[in-house]
Length: 70
Image (tube, rainbow, N blue to C red; front, top):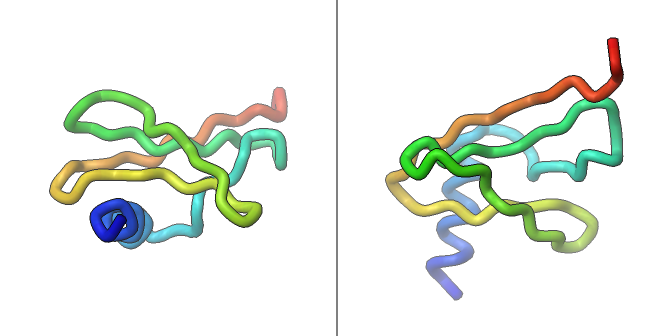
């Protein structure tokens, strides 16, 4: 359990933003990409927020997609 919490906190700290929001809340889809594995991280709902679980030492990117049609 400690490793999971540490991993999640390290990803949030590295990215420097609040937890990932679900796509249906607005015109922008936000996702976190594990650059070492070249995969999009799965989100996990917790107390009304969306979280991602990362691994210490991995590199991550944040991807924003405009869903507004503009």
